[in-house]
Length: 252
Image 1: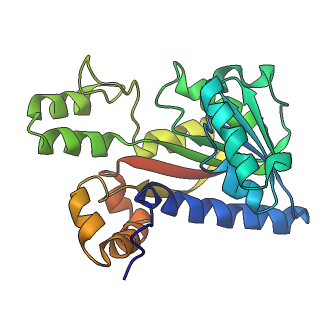
Image 2: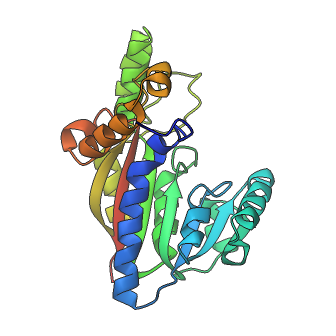
């Protein structure tokens, strides 16, 4: 039986976390350094930064929100990793106003590209922050998931609009400025000077399943997590995922 206290947030992070942890383990082996320098752009209150610091890595979080950075500081202190987490106010488009170019073994860019004016520049900056052969973890909103969501809600015209809109928006009221296909994300990574590796679909089913079922049915959360993990790597499911994750490596 699944743990009833286990947060549903794991549905949003489990696949990405496993891929990221494996990539960092490979960098540890390649560099011979147990503690890596990690940059988390748009890292907010530390959903990834604090667990990464708990693994022994040094993490710099760049985020435009002072409130998020305050929450990050508190969270890192409560986890006992404050000395390995640094918060800096800024954003990915002005990244090198606040951090070093080429100074990181890994860069996370999660939930950022959807909201910046120039996603291509955002990816270029993320890659430029990496050391040669450093790992890029890119997570962004998927076009297909939004189309399915609007259609299931009965908003068929909006679903069709998203399909034809260059930015993947379903209308003027859409709060997300950009959505991506897997092909577009891998193109951005390649154009920025990195090699695109594994692509994973994130929240393929999680946003379609009624929350009450996951929260009340014994074992449902664990079963859904396993299903998400199994589908994440299959290209057939990338087209309907709410988010897409691309793992890249900066060319040496």
